[in-house]
Image (cartoon, rainbow, N blue to C red; front, top):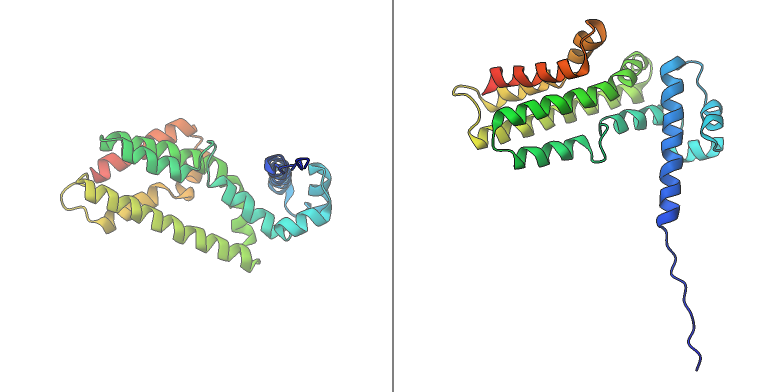
Length: 209
């Protein structure tokens, strides 16, 4: 009996094409929304990304959905691995709390430099768009939880200065990771991102260790 040849379907190529298409859509949406949100349409985004309007609606559900995805993509930072994963890996590998704080400063500045422009747009939209307002509330709550997670780590390692509670450490980390601080010092006062990263790291060291 002759052997029947079977063909194994490799979906990796399809996934990679889908990823590239998604990135092209988000890149086009981000550029246009930051330039002029009011003038941006799904049709103009589709034209720039080289996809159909239906593709965008099916994948993102409209402009609000695109803004949400742009924002959440920005929270991942610029590296190949998501910023929060790099943060957790780094803190487990490092034994020097000052190094941890300085690396946190760098990651904070990295994420802020990516996310701040679209967040400024979202802050304006939130006044009239309940979905965007809810997204901002949710991400702020998640950020606070993340800072509490870091504060507990510092407490467990014995890094916090005597008298500094987990709650106080959480608040300091929460302030230092706030995009509003980045806006004040980098956007309004003209600090460079590296200078901002150093400032955040040293501030946390002085305030907590």
